[in-house]
Length: 211
Image (cartoon, rainbow, N blue to C red; front, side, top):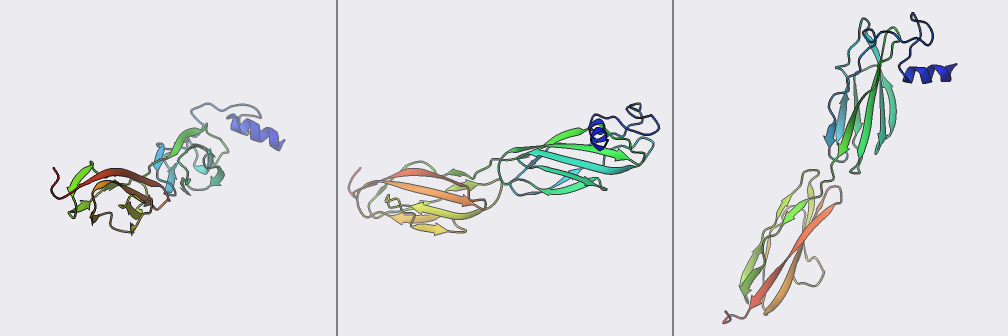
């Protein structure tokens, strides 16, 4: 019998004054309102808001929240809001809300989504440069992050594959080259989620008398 009740309740069928297996008029069924879909960063604290749900002739007593996809949960509360943590992966969670009033009448589900952004840092390090031997050149990259904070900046200025410059708070540095040639300068930024982005530019170093 319990299985039958659960199945029928999910289909919008209630029990009580209308008789087993009968559906009350839509004007009497509570109305679930889940609010707008949510866009969040990985790990954000997110509040699901169902307070706009409407009880029709009876007070709403239960909010039933279900999530599926990147984040799975099935939670019943006596409040219209629910605080959850957004998944750490950039995927979508489907959300649904069903409310039940004090007379046991069950709403149809209202649906929305929780989308976690795939937002690695964005980096621009400028165009290639040509300098003379012994002249110091400044490296001043532009780093943009939407989710998280940059926790590490790195430069490989010697074109040897080793990031010799490492800083937690400053992306800027400079270097003088004392031999002629063409060198690759590589930059890498890492955010608080461990995601990286970077770029590379060529530094052409000419002898002092060269044009």
